[in-house]
Image 1 (cartoon, rainbow, N blue to C red):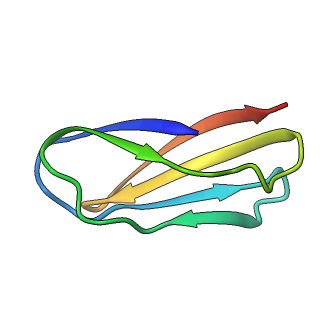
Image 2 (tube, rainbow, N blue to C red):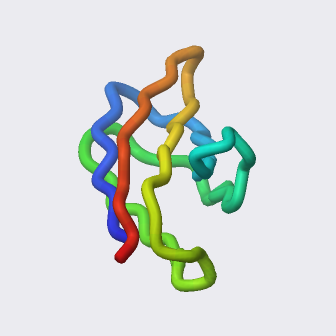
Length: 70
């Protein structure tokens, strides 16, 4: 999965992928992201088909997105 994250200043982010039961099934802790658009690549091939939530945490903020794995 490729994610583009736009941020207003350099910061560390954590990305958790959770399943429908709210269990964290994948975590991304990469290098600090720079101001502007950043592309994150995550290998989620180990996950079963289904609907997952991608939770992005950084700078005191959180954003959630749904992803469907077929």
